[in-house]
Amino acid sequence: AQKITQTQPGMFVQEKEAVTLDCTYDTSDQSYGLFWYKQPSSGEMIFLIYQGSYDEQNATEGRYSLNFQKARKSANLVISASQLGDSAMYFCAMRERGTSYDKVIFGPGTSLSVIP
Amino acid sequence: DGGITQSPKYLFRKEGQNVTLSCEQNLNHDAMYWYRQDPGQGLRLIYYSQIVNDFQKGDIAEGYSVSREKKESFPLTVTSAQKNPTAFYLCASSGGYEQYFGPGTRLTVT
Picture 1 (cartoon, rainbow over the protein chains, first blue to last red):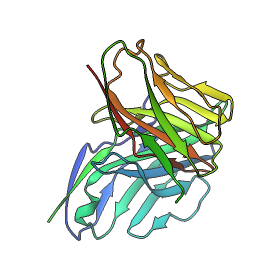
Picture 2 (cartoon, chains in turn purple, cyan):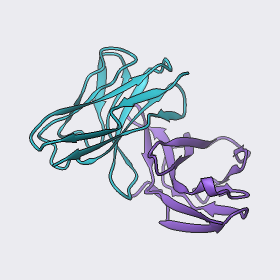
Picture 3 (cartoon, chains in turn red, green):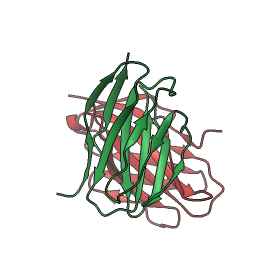
């Protein structure tokens, strides 16, 4: 069963507009962490934002915010005031306790294109 | 500057040859990871290491081997037993909750 679901393979947004990238997850753990990474065409993975399962406030980092809805198991990334440099793949990931180590599971990704 | 280096960026090999991908970090992190990424897909874990001289198989370890003789280094060998070795390989390290990634090595086997 897929642990991380990103239902939008591709998204388009006008420059300066806000965009929401969807992510739902599946876990039976009470303690876990959720991440978003950006992967430009160069291939490097850039950490954007983190949300712990016990954090009551939604995480924010500059133009990035994470809309965390625990009961719905949803961790959507909101990018405000999109810029051309935001065009990239975006991956949602979850860190949960494994039997011998903390597993990090990645979703399939969403390709975001920012239109001038 | 602290970070993770992977070399080379592009690597070409003939089928049947073993090839070793380098990963070095100067972040003083205990944990290191190797991931494989195929076109249009997410990352899949090959091997991980929590501490020097110890490493564990991830989800797709068949055809790969690793060593962890030093804290800073976690090389990955793609053996001839790996059926579809052509892919993008990412190394990561972690000292807390997030993982830091290297720039990746794109391996092409023909």
